[in-house]
Amino acid sequence: MVLQHILDIPPLTRVIVISSVILSYATYVQYLKPSNLYLNYKLAFSDQFQPWRALTSILYFGDLDLITVLRLFFFQSISSSLELHTFRGFANYLYYLMLNFITITLIGLWLNEHSLTEYFVEALMYVWGRQNQERPLLFMFVIPIKAQYMVWFFIFLNIISGRSIQSNLIGALIGHTYYYLAYVVPKLPRFQGLQLLTTPKFLMNICRNFERQNEL
Image (tube, rainbow, N blue to C red):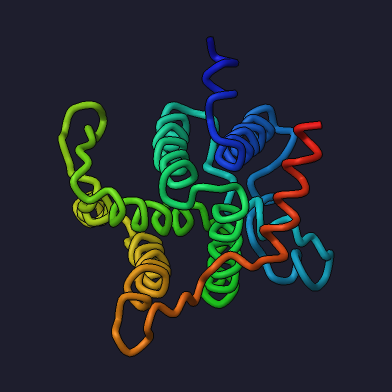
């Protein structure tokens, strides 16, 4: 039953979730330290050249506990929805994720932020909320909230709990920038349907060939 649920998750979301679980488990059993996963310019690109930190700083959701499990379930839900219904296609969602990874990594280096998971989740949640505005959700299985307000609800929670809202705001800004360029700009008369963020053809071809080989 668990295996079937995992197999039902769309491929890119499945890779992210499994990778995140593996990283959390590795720190839980002390095979890795969280400090081995966080973004640091000198360690990642200069002194020791550990470029994977740019990826693990986004994929590491934290210690393997109930909060992390709930966060991963929530991420899996919104990411699956984006992959299946908003971007519809392996290449389209892969390109969207790549844009997010690059943007968030550059911002993380600029701000000297070590953990970028919140930025990533907030960016995806913003786009998902705009695409599913009236969809109702139950926060903690109790509080009903419409999808379009989830980003602002989490910002409110952080404010009343005294936590920083920097990652929430910047993540929302990244999501809004993508949404505006991808969905609003093409509808403006002056741009006449200009598509600024269309998936490159070479990536479409690579993914198409990859899918064909897997079918053989």
